[in-house]
Image (cartoon, rainbow, N blue to C red):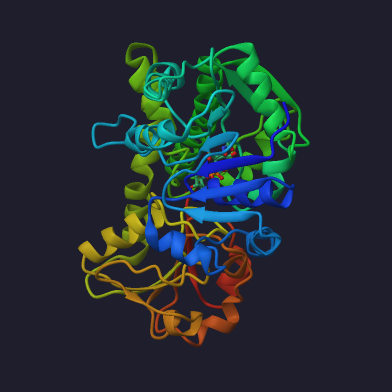
Length: 423
Ligand code: SAJ
């Protein structure tokens, strides 16, 4: 099949880059978002999210005249659903955005169309939730239109490259649907595209992020063991990783974001009896902010009234995304314990944590601070010169939750440096 038009429903971190890339590749694109403010901003030519290279790509798509915006789907040959699937308080997938998106497509669906679901979902969602809703149009999935599940795999911070180059798994509700989805994405995907069934593709997506979560959990558990035994986890990990079949990840203040911290619960929900290791890994990672807080408490001695310069608030380095950020949890915990916290994040300049003093320069954050705390290792913070910042601060305590600051440099500048995972 050849496609000339596509309607992308959901213009977030995945939908907006996808819609822009389709437009730059020559397709006529309608980008749909239910938030009128987002639509207005995009119509005025401004992307509402930050991601390296997105500004330029969006501008190119916008200037081509092939990218238009709307609050509800318009007729097109293909539809892509890229809406969020958060986790509920009961740790189950909240699929109401997917449901709404499918409902909004049904009235404009025509025979011969293709619908692709990209959102991360529990196995079975495409067949059991999306197909029945679309069938309410009077057309039948598989017989009258194609339906496929094709998860995104992009890494925030490197989305534009990975969108094009990563291998993709495409799960059709039947082989013709998978084939049609491949034809659509041939517009820009250069990576290999492997066809399978929809439920397998849904499970594959969850396995990928669960694998990462479990690996981060063991890195975090190793760091706790190392600290208890008086071992330096950073050195120990480097040495263990010399083994050709070992690749231990980095410990830190927790696993945040909207994927790794969420998706494993969808597998747990689907097969709770079988998913004990996965649940345990989630609990280890969710406990890591509290573990990090206790480390800060020990380093500070007394938190009441302590002036803290907290560097970084995002869920990981070099992104502007604050979702499920362990850094924010730690700042809240510090405030609850009576510390006075100034937060500074050069990538998330709007980010404010209630009770903290949000500042816009490093100097302001450090002014008269008793303790400098590295929460997120943005490039700018990795290269801090302790000798230069010492003069700005009142105290000489430093806590590094990312294992990036050099002990000799900090100690030479008179600091006592406390590093996560170092006994
Ligand atoms: N983290 C560590 N130690 C590490 C690596 C990560 O503590 O060694 C932490 C990060 O600081 C962060 C969290 O884990 O808080 C998640 O970060 P990440 O970079 O591992 O993953 P995400 O959530 O930004 O993106 C993941 C990616 N999945 C995998 O690498 C398997 C990405 O490819 C997916 O497309 C994305 O989830 C998604 O949308 O599902």
